[in-house]
Amino acid sequence: MARIAFIGLGNMGGGMAANLVKAGHEVRAFDLSEEALSRAEGNGASRAASTSEAVKDAEVVITMLPAGKHVKAVYADEVAPNAAKGVMMIDCSTIDVATAKSVGETLRGLGFDFVDAPVSGGIAAANQGTLTFMVGGSDEGFERARPFLEQMGKAVIHAGGAGAGQAAKICNNMLLGATMAATCETFALAEKLGLDLQTFYDISSKASGQSWSMTSYCPVPGVGPETPADRGYEGGFAAALMLKDLKLAEEAAQSVGAYTPMGAEAEELYQRFVERGGGSKDFSALIKMIDDSWKVPDSK
Ligand code: NAD
Image (cartoon, rainbow, N blue to C red; front, side, top):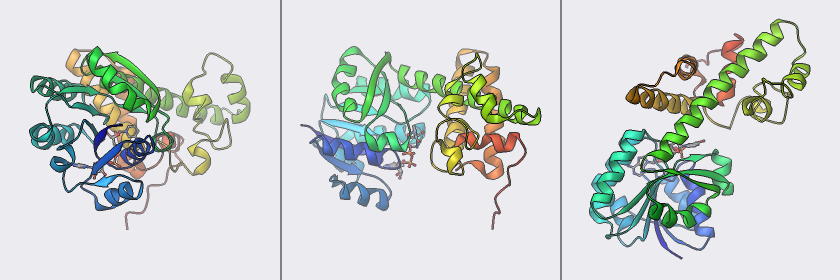
C-alpha cells in the first residue's frame, strides 16, 4: 500500500480518492474548497493544509484539476519543490496537449516520473471505479502508474509518449461532440418529416447511421435506453465540459495544421448553447436548441 497525495477532490477527484482509500492506500488530500476536503475526509482520506504539505511524504501524487493553468501552477509551485525525488506523478485532469507535454518534460528533468492520464466516464464512473484511463508517458511510467489507475477504473490504456493521453482524450471527445450534434439534428429533422421517433430509432440503430450517441445516449426522451434526456437533461456530462474539450481539440488541431470542420462546427454549436444558459445541462440537451424548444433560463 502506498502513501498517495490527491489534489483536486471535486466531482471527479472526490470519488477517485475514495476508491484509493477503499483499496487500502493512505490518501492525503488537498483541495481549495473546504466542502470538497470535508467530503474526502468523510470518505477516509486525511486532510492536508496545502498541496505542499500533502506531497511531502508521498510516494505517488495524483491531480484532478479543472484546466491546464491549474495543473501547471500546482506542479511548478507546490508539487515539484516539495516531493521526494523519484516520486510517481499522475495528472488525470483534461488539459491541453502542449501543457501536458511541457509539465511532463519539466518534471522528468527534475527526476520525477510523470504521466498524463485523462479519463473517459463521468461522475458515476468516478464513484464506481469504472473510469477508462488514456495514458501518455514512458513504458516505465505507465507500468508504475497502472496499478493505481486500475483501482479507479475498468480500463487503463497506454496511448503513447508524453501528451498522448490528452491527445487521445480530445480526439475521442471531438468525435463524440460531432456525433451528438449530428444525432440531435437528425432526430429534429426526422420529427419535422413526420417520422415516429421510436420507429426511426429502431431503423437507424440497426442501419448505417448508428453511433454511440444514438444507441447508448439518445438525446430524445423515452427513446432508446434510459439517458439524461429522460431526467430533464440533468446529470451526465455537462455541455460546458463538452465545450471545454471541443476548444482543446480545436486548439490542438490548429497547432498541427489539421483540418477539423466537423469539430469546429460542434464547438460553435456548443458555444451558442452555453451562451444561452445550457452549460450545466447534459450535452445531449443540445437537441433543444436545434429543434428550437430551448428556453433561455431566467437570469434573476
Ligand atoms: P471540479 O471543478 O468539480 O473539481 C476540480 C477541483 O479542483 C475543485 O474542487 C477545485 O476546488 C479544485 N482546485 C482547483 N484549483 C486547485 C488548486 N490550485 N489546488 C487544489 N485544488 C484545486 O471538476 P471535475 O468535474 O472534478 O473535473 C476535473 C477534471 O476532470 C477536469 O479537467 C474535467 O475536464 C475532467 N473531466 C470531468 C468529467 C466530468 O464528468 N465531470 C469527465 C471527464 C473528465
